[in-house]
Image 1 (cartoon, rainbow, N blue to C red):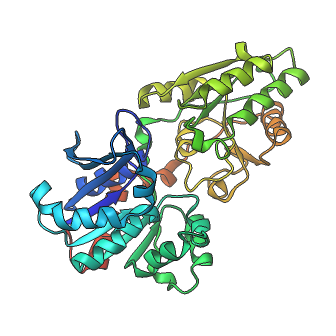
Image 2 (cartoon, one colour):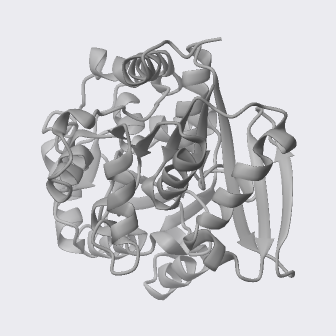
Length: 386
């Protein structure tokens, strides 16, 4: 049995947190891998420490920790190492795993590194985190981050550009230990519909999808979209420019206030979180998809929008360099001017993206799940199947 370790996982309070980790785990399980998942759920609580073991709706194990000093516990995974080494079998009824698979180097990768020593088993790290490269040089935690990568039997970045970044900051690690395993994107949920935007369009609906949690303030630049909307209205007031946003979080109130201050509140619709069917309807109804990201490791929603046939305007960052080409969208500078010019260019020149075709197949749950099983076979010398 291979045990996945993660500090990111969706639940009722955070339905989109780590949903890409959940999707990979379910894909591996469906492909026949004997994989259990432990979600170390840490948050603030009224007591010094309160620990509860739970099972989630899909069989995931949950180590729920509520504590006044939860940030300290989060940043020092030796505490979780000691607890798991002593309590895992007693609390779950499961034997010691054959291997560990950490999701994100900090803190899950460090936890896996420490547990692998206690249990004398190998571990691998899948890297989803856009800050991973920078954290190899972190003043407090950089040494432990580098050590976890160095000790891992394999490192699985979710994209080619993340792999290249990690190889650059970790030159001592052999390149063959890095293998890209992409995120799961079930694109069958977002079927292609032909779109065509042109200057004949007198109403243009712009769509964005991003979590509005405070931690994303400098990463998901929804504020820049609002400023872009002001610029579009000023230049072409005869066009009914509308922006619709999918996603929720603590930034919403501030963004609503900003829209009101800019005088565009009547042009912005905040949709909150949506299920796949409702999101697909938004993709099909919009004219352009916007993704003003400072950084991305993958960019799942951009791929979804493209598969649904929606033209995309994205920031010019490495994550999108292999996907977004002139036939289906534009990569522009992460500025109000850049996005304004990109939107107007698509509107004036016209854009009608073709279907993605076979490119989308490699992200399917069946493909990613089978690939994970194959990587386990190569890494651990046997097929970890039921």
